[in-house]
Image 1 (tube, helix red, strand yellow):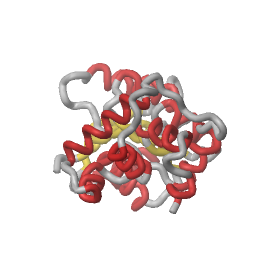
Image 2: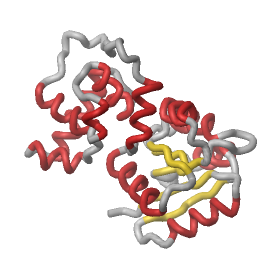
Image 3: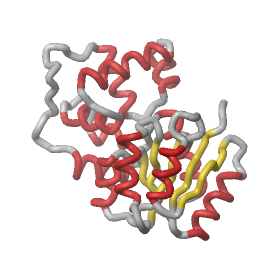
Image 4: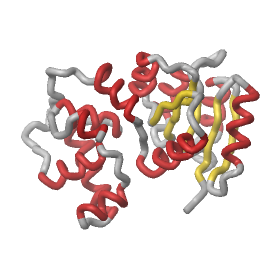
Length: 227
């Protein structure tokens, strides 16, 4: 397994250095860049685009000078969609959580989280592309999902197959591609093909889009995801 390349963006130097020290002690993690604001981070990514040195994951604070974490996340999600973003912030307001998820964050943590939860989040995001704990799933349901409106797709005649529905349900349960393959007796490559078909058919851009689609169209319930 290749090391996970991580960039940190936080204007609180002592906190950022503490996180960097914590993560650098892990054998499978490389801290490749630290930024004190969103502009420094975006500039670094643009300068290194295409040379293979950009991070797999960015851990970013919300409140930073020059360019804040929300706007930086929006830019990075648009320009570098393969880079996954974890919000790590002191803000625990539900509207902040919803806003960050909506602009492209793959996960959301508050700064009083444990080192173990941070490591779990990094691993899950690296393996699956996203990781939402129960609190974040509740926010997604309350703020991002219209309770009486099903998500429509212009591919209405192209219905999901039974196998795609099975894969969709397991994606919503935050199983990795390898775990889904094992459960359904498929190859990982076949699971990836089903995932891509789901994104195409539902016109969703990412995993959070699929979760919202699945709940709105009653393939899963919030309660089942919290079990």
